[in-house]
Length: 134
Image (cartoon, rainbow, N blue to C red; front, side, top):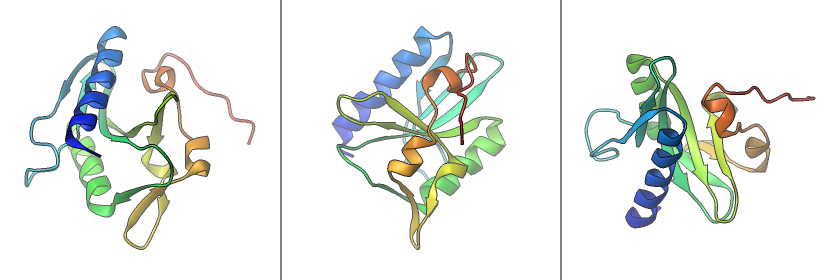
């Protein structure tokens, strides 16, 4: 994603999190440090979240093995729930759990099937639980 567009969607997510009672920050240097760090970290004192934020105009979205591994590694050490936060134009946010990602030879893929397993912001924030029929 372009740096400017990436920054804009990260800030949009941070705004949503603050409006819902979570302290949230962009992590300086995410993607450019030798230590694993997500794009956005948030907590309300009860729930701690770590997000790798992506924006795409169409699917599929491909993620490298390394970026997912680093998100999980950081989240495990920090006590956070890891999510891929995907923003597509004129659509709602999609929050994807790591176990919903499709493994590929080079990493992971987010496609329509994975999107159907995503959760909404209310569930991420612990405000509701989506009911799935299958």
